[in-house]
Length: 367
Ligand code: ATP
Image (tube, rainbow, N blue to C red; front, side, top):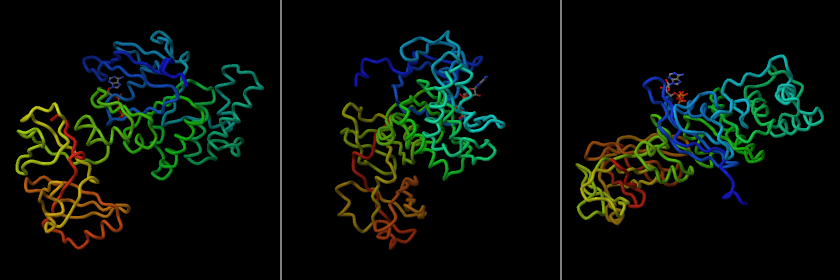
């Protein structure tokens, strides 16, 4: 592969957007690779859709530029950009069959007739709807209609497909199925997918890389595992998955973090951290070990912090334990159902417990 010498599918340089005095996208630089499944993830109102609309050309940027496949498209209208879009409200033509819905764009573009049939069949095979070609949209389930819309988005083989919360209208089970299906389809067609969502699980499941946005800014761009294991900020740590956060300061010897009311805690303090500087400690619930307060010796090597077991919640595949620390902060510990959780069953609610973790699992983030 010679991808290093190829231009990225999408390159944004200093791209920004204001509506009046309201700057909803702060100047940002971003490169999205060819054949990448790239998600833009952030809470409602953070600017995801506006960013996407600037890539498509529906929205004119207030500054900066958009390149597609190495070419500046700032003055290229949407219909002439080599991309397509898929929205949650995927309006299919009700009077046309599935086949004709998918073929529609090719007919408009005056694609040669003999080519149309092959392309439509390929697109229907991709979404596994060959047997439904003659049905009307009203005769399909919500998930099947969604697949037709996807077939329609890829049939013209654009370089980039932008998907704005396309699974929002589907129920939970179908959503999960479609997440895997979308990823499979993206691999099969080899088109760059830019996927806009506020659902962190969706982004983690499907993406090659994720850009996490908040208040118009891209806070971190990384792979799902990196975003989860090495969040760069408190916002990213708590927005993606659940995370315990404790405020404190780097200890005098620079080896731990001192949290008011709890003393010095085990932490992965970066070598360049200034002693005394304010930081946030971020620890995933599944990285915390919960033990009865009597096993001090066993947990001592990992450093322990005392607390009281408040309650436990059964979530099917795991148990969540809530532990109130002496500082009154409540920490969450998750334990897979089965043996590990069963072993903790003997600890009654209200009992004193110890929490511990490996230093590497307590990430030190800017306060
Ligand atoms: P959601 O997930 O709810 O769709 P989003 O992250 O996609 O949200 P945007 O739709 O990009 O967010 O909106 C970002 C901000 O820009 C919001 O505060 C919104 O009110 C504002 N905004 C969007 N479009 C316009 C417009 N045409 N005129 C004025 N303000 C706008």
